[in-house]
Length: 237
Image (cartoon, rainbow, N blue to C red; front, side, top):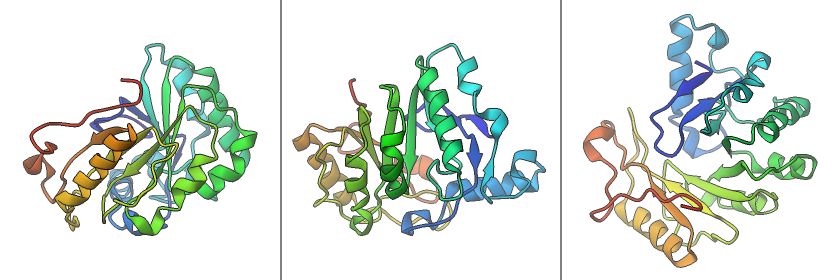
């Protein structure tokens, strides 16, 4: 379960050369990855023997090189490439694989763009690497400033779970915004105006907008339609 086909609408498959993480902001409160890791640990899945404690999986580092068919790959859906406990050398090796596997598009999302920015100049940013950060409310909006210094071809934001208005968010040098409400037990509600504000900001700035879900305890009941349509925009499409 460190490599998984996925129901995430904006990607094709997940690749987890590391698993496990720690919480850094309100968006982490009901972390789906932590819940899944606990379930897999209880099932005896060997890669989650330590539960949600950060774990390196060296044997998975080159796995995408063996996938010939081009895929959109969400990197570390169960972790964070730029977590402080991931050694620099391991980050370099993840990037080496992405640099070599040019048939794929790699979508790297971090809640730790400060470390990303510090390492960015030492990493090779081939055009198939998209880099993003999470912005759930304006309290963490400064993360976007760190993202802007990264010389990636595509920079994106994951505003999910959306926990407040982002009407004042500066989208300069951002190519894609994904947003959605929180889902699962204890899900905090998303106000429709927050979603509309973000959509309207993207339209004005000519930034691709992807609305993933309204969320809720039973997200299948609330769907993902916004004002009569779905928003599935991606950069370059």
